[in-house]
Image 1 (tube, rainbow, N blue to C red):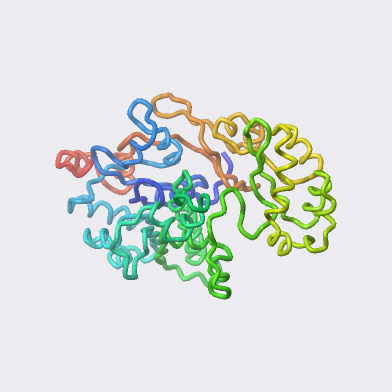
Image 2 (cartoon, rainbow, N blue to C red):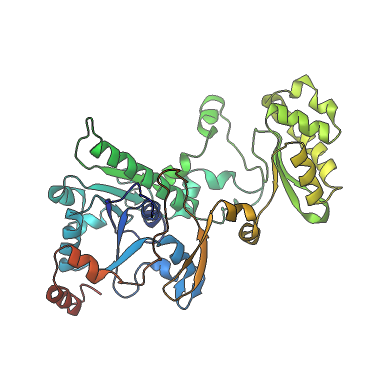
Length: 401
């Protein structure tokens, strides 16, 4: 096993479902020890989300690989005391409760910093730890709307569409993991490291808002409100989905100046390719309907495979719209190791996304499968100084499981 970037970094995960746990998974993939605290009985609700195999979500197998599961009832004082003990020896704590929840349990930032000044706390919530909406419940669907993404998705005049994935959660998890890495570097860097932890405050809606590119500057300067544009990318031309024979669509992104000229030559429209008014994107954006019409006239009389072959030969970026079935059968994914197969505790072999990003010297690894509920309770507590009698007593009281 190759050296891991985050070997020796201990992370206490108090989150559930997607955002916080995705941040922890990202750190786990590069060697961090993740101690995932789950409630006795049902554990993380993600265990029951989407499609289940023998009572457990197959999504859980991907989200919780490389983690240890410890069952602690955080509502009980004894459970809170155990978390304080774990936090006192952790580098990072990740949580995505509604703001104020940990404070009610005596596990807030001020409480934990007092016992471990080096602790880094990642806090993920719908609206952030302050501001007028901080106490409101916030899920990704609401955050994606508040962040501006839902408004521009879909087709004009139709119900605003949602992406079929919880982007607000996952992107917030990535932002959180990045924040943890920055805080670890600041704390531990050789020249000038503070030796102190800090809070990383990630709001779901802000993670989406951060992706909105030119929308705010264009509104502030020109009063322009970007509208939904279906399969196209507003203001970038040509970049759209074009109908082929048989009802399939090809995606073409020929918005580079030289690429645009190659595409126009390929489809027999050098009049558009050599038009000086269309040499740059701003000119093409003004006449996007004309350009898209010319491309559609070419694609609609050819099969998808024929179109893709011709575009590839002309070095025009293009592709088919992949279903998950297409992804699973594409040899490029397998060749890159982007799909990994992990055997679950029940013996089920589960394909899942591999380690991203790829590091040449210290690559990440799937070191072990997702845990069953409470699988590591005894092991982790013994590592933190609890003996068998104490653990048995706490289990009898319902504090542990």
